Amino acid sequence: MKEITDVKEAGLAAIERSNDLNELTQVRNEYLSKKGLVASLMSGMKDLDASLRPAFGALINDCKEELEKALKQKQEALTLVALQEKMAKDWIDISLPATKFPVGNLHPLTLVQQEIEDIFRSMGYRVVEGPEVELDLYNFERANIPADHPARDMQDTFYVDSKWLLRTHTTAIQTRTLEKSADSLPIKVVCPGKVYRRDDDDATHSHQFTQIEGLVVGENITLADLKGTLQLLAKSMFGEQRIIRFRPSYFQFTEPSVEVDVSCHICNGKGCNVCKGSGWIEILGAGMVHPHVLDMAGIDGTKYTGFAFGLGVERVAMLKYGIDDIRHCYTNDARFLSLFKRFE
Ligand code: DAH
Image 1 (tube, rainbow, N blue to C red):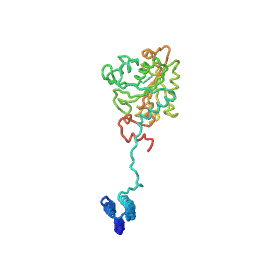
Image 2: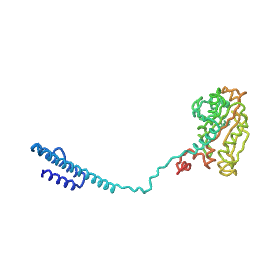
Image 3: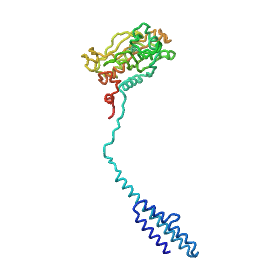
Image 4: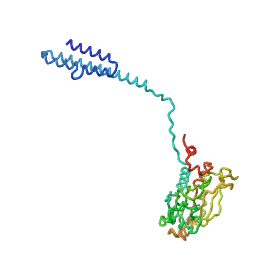
């Protein structure tokens, strides 16, 4: 019995003396493992008289429990110390300013395209797309552009082969839509997309740019509907302060045709390099869909009428944001793009 008490006292002292978790593990092994001191005391029980065994057993159990309890307490204390040491070594200053990760933003052309789409969606238009590599058929023939027209020249159009080309205008989506929807009139669509022309790039020209085509076909659609629609578009996009002018014009696929100009935002109409001295920037061609164009698509041009327009997204973006060179839209200078951030 004395031996048990001695082992217990020695064990408790050893636990108390342990300076770290390693030492504590050694003490645990020494006292409480299968071949430890407590286990060897236990094995002495079989040599005892049966009457002494209960008291002996109780004492050993008490010894074991006390040691276990002390071990647990010590372990918790040492774990805390270890954690505190680690925290003292590995501390971070949470009051330091955090690393800022740059957040991207939509491209100005995307912003303008979405804004125009939204205006037309709110008037019940659908948004329709088409292929950029297009058949001559939809780009030219169905748009009533004859084979000898200068637009078909190799100088103006990127040809893939004699049948395929890079579409030169979103009017190709118009002619496709006319054909596709010939049996499900009325049509009310806007068609955004990239177009390609063999232009020399300068402040206002790019060999690739973006257009949005508009097309409405149904019964009793008139030039007055076109006017009202374009007026509403101009007001929503540019506000009241810009002046808009309508000029009679000519397109093969419309009759009559108009061109819509907006007063130059850079020089306010005085004349500068953006407007090439004229004070006006053309943003839009429009007109009543030529009856022959309707006929070619399988729509009865004597019964149905329609209007169409084609708008340059770059020009609108340049007007809206005061961009003085169309090439900024394509050089992807992050400093330029970040000007269109909505949030810092
Ligand atoms: N396709 C013409 C162009 O690229 C723009 C255009 C003019 C489209 C009149 C139209 C329209 O739908 O009616 O210059």
